[in-house]
Length: 136
Length: 160
Image (cartoon, rainbow over all chains, first blue to last red; front, side, top):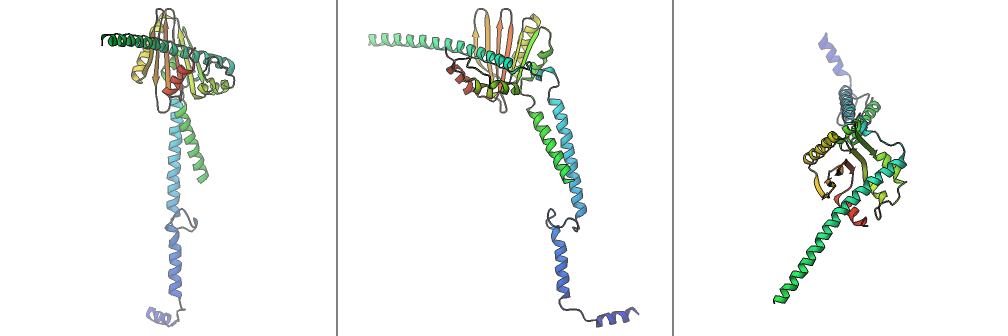
């Protein structure tokens, strides 16, 4: 019975170019798989894989978020040290200026001592040079 | 899904960045904020930005606006208490040694000892000044994005 059917089927004429058209269609279906980020998402045979990668990315993002919150809470000081002492910018400005002035004054105190030593050194050098020229 | 993930990622990045920039001060001195017999003053970057517009040239020749712009925080700790003074001095010595500060200046006079240290950090630099007088010890920490050249300019421009 089956043999008869096959023989009958073989007798049916195959339309011209059907084989080429079929291979072209298969190639077309296979094409989106080469670039999974582009192409028709719904018809892609790799739809499941892509969903998996998004899920993994989501998990990674959540992990980073949790780490971020943890680090934020750990590093951002919850104590009083980070709270501004003054609410008024004018008072804060005055205090900051006072602190900078004190720094500049102390730096200059040191520099003045250094310059005084330099002047004395130069004077000693001049005296020494004078004596040396006299000896010559 | 994609939107949710991108939102989570953005939020996570913001949290991470803010946690990294949260400490703009010398952490070791934070504990003095709630210590008895110690006066602790903290001026943040935000307050300095607000104060920038109010500055007057109180130090002759010094560009206060420029100095304020480069500062991230100022911490001022003062105490007259004997125990607190000893603790504060030890703390400064420890920080200087551990964080590898460079000594810029040491001025010893009859009634006062001044030490100025500098740490050139990649993210943040610190100028640490400690003054020890007969009845009081004070420490001022300037944290910011300045370089040693800026300190040099400070001495050159503010000569009286």
